[in-house]
Every structure is written in structure tokens, then in C-alpha cells.
Amino acid sequence: MPNRVPSRIMSRAFAGALALGLTAGAALAASFGDTEVKIEQVAGDLRGPWAVDFLPGGGFLVTERRGRLWHYGPAGRRQAVSNIPDVAAVGQGGLLDVMVPRDFASSREVFLSYARAQEGGGQGTALAKGRLSADGTRLENLTRLFQMAPGSSGGKHFGSRIVEGPEGHIFLTMGERGDRPAAQDLSRHNGSVIRINRDGSVPRDNPFVGREGAQPEIWSYGHRNPQGAALGPKGRIWVAEHGAKGGDEVNLIEKGANYGWPVISYGTHYSGAKIGQGTSKPGMKQPVSYWDPSIAPSGMAFYEGALFPDWQGDAFVGSLKFDYLARLSGDPLAQVAKLETRETARVRDVAVAPDGSVWFISEDRGAIYRVTPAD
Image 1 (cartoon, helix red, strand yellow):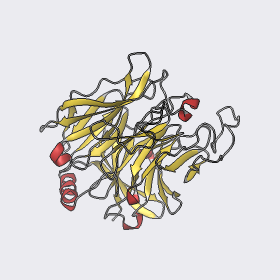
Image 2 (cartoon, one colour):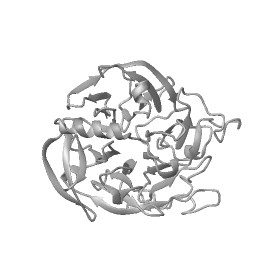
Image 3 (spheres, rainbow, N blue to C red):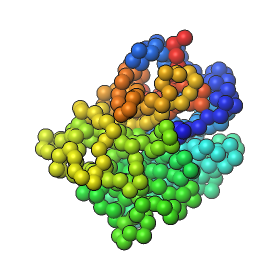
Image 4 (tube, rainbow, N blue to C red):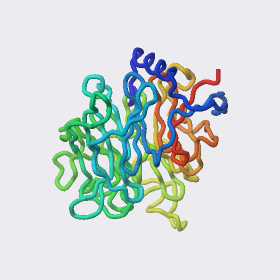
């Protein structure tokens, strides 16, 4: 049950909309492992694009880190969306993820994650929602649902991916903001995956509800900087997160689990010094798989679609460092193929469209591309 759940009607509408002229430029033939594909640009002229998600009927939303949300209609017309949150575009922070929930057709709600300046100084990852106006130009009833506490100075490690859980809860990833020990401190949100209700309240069955000194929103902790997250098969939450020098991880998220940063890691500090106590410790979770050297993972999506039947249940993760889109498969999930072309320069996000095509954002090229079968 992936994060973005298409209906057959929505898939046909989306494919029809693409046929109306979203594609810009000629298709490029490429190999994605043993699969021949074509790559087509669907949007360009973007400055610092960070995330994309799909609307019913063929439209989609795109964030730019410096604080702009774009609405693309079914025929490709682009409009800026007003009344978005004030963002702190500091370092890696800014307007980050966008998530369109499964009930958008009736609710018209859109969720945004972003870096927010805090009253006491510094910045923290925050989450807001609003209703997209009928003409797609404004967020109405904008409400802040969550803000990292207590926040941190500096401009790195905001995490900031949003996932709608199988029961409608909202999961949000947060980096440790460069403050390594804070990832083991339950009194702080740094380095955690949180879980809240859709109205921002805390579910009573969260693992640390009622524990003195613990932030009740925390679902898991001990993360460094999870910039990829997705709902995978069997309704489970997965994240892809940055290690230091080596040790980028793919983690299956479990309730109340500690993922070890900075006590355990398969990487080293950038100086080459050992991190913490090594690669394992009782009570701390092991990654499902990891990359060494680091690929700088960003964006994550699981495949459920008709265009690539051999990819069912596989995952995609973007590489910012080595400029490719990875496909992960198997049990345990691990990289089996990569798409590497001029178009995959700094892959910031990846998403599976309702018609089964695979979309990715190239941050360096300021563009969004879709991948379909070569035939």
C-alpha cells in the first residue's frame, strides 16, 4: 500500500492529461538496469525544486526550497500558489516536502513541511496544511500542525519528508540538525520520525506518550538526516537517510525503535575518525541495507503500477552525490540498478505517478522528468 494510492479512474485521467501536452522536448532512450526506458521532461525552469506530488485529474504540485509552491494543471499550465507558510531558507532549510493525501478529491487538503524560524532563535522543521482553492492558486485555512522543539541553529539536517500512514496518521522525518547527541535525547525532536493525527494532535498509542521528559510525537529516533521516506508494501514506513562518510541507510521504521545515530554507524566521521561504538549495539536497530561510499540519498518511493510489472514492490531512491536514480529490490531491500544520464543530476525527489510512470526531480537541471517503458 504505497503512499500515493491511485484509483483506476485517476490513472486513466492522469494518462489522458499527459497526452494533452505536459511532455516538453523529445524523449531520451536509456537503460535502467536490464530495462529499456525513455525519459521525458514534464516541467522545467524551476529554482531549487525539492518535492513533487500528484493531484487527481492530471495536475501536480512542486515545491522550491526558497519558498515557492507551484501548481501545474492537467494541460501543463503553471501557477504560483499563494498563502504558503513563511519559511527560513537557511542552508538546507526552506520549503521542503509536499504531500497530497488520499482523500484530496473530497478534502482538498495539502500538507507542507518546511524550516521555520523560531521565537527563541534558530530554526526547526515544521508541518502545515491548507485547502487548495478550486482554481489552484491559494492555500486556504492554512494551519501549522507541528513544530520541532526546541529547534537548533545552523542550516543543515532538516529531514522533512511527509508520509501518510495506512490509517491516515501523518509521519514526518527530522534530521538531528547537526547536533549528534540530540538524536538520542527523547526530550528533543531532533533525529526522529514523528507520528501525529491529521489535526496535529498526538495519537494515544504513540510509544512515548506519558513518559516523563519525552516528546510524545516521537515514533522512532536515533536518525541522522532522513531525506527519503515512503509507505511500502504491507503498510510499513521506510526511510532513506544520510550517514556521514559512508553509512547511508535504508531503514524499516518500527514503533519506539532506536536507529543508533550517533552511537552506531557503518560510516566514519569526515575526518576518518570512528563514529561512536562501532556498527552494532544491543537495543539499537540495524539498517536493512546501507551504502558505502555514501550516495547522499533524497526522495523515496515504492512501485505499484501497471507500466513496469517486474518492478512491483521495488523502491526508488535518488542520489544527490553521484547523480543517479537507484532501484532497490529483494529481501533485504538493496540496490540492484541505477538510471544515470544527464537528466539525473542531483536527484532530489522521486514519485510514482497514478499512471505508473516514475517521476524524478533533477535539482541541478531545475526540471522534472518521467520514466516510461521504451516501447
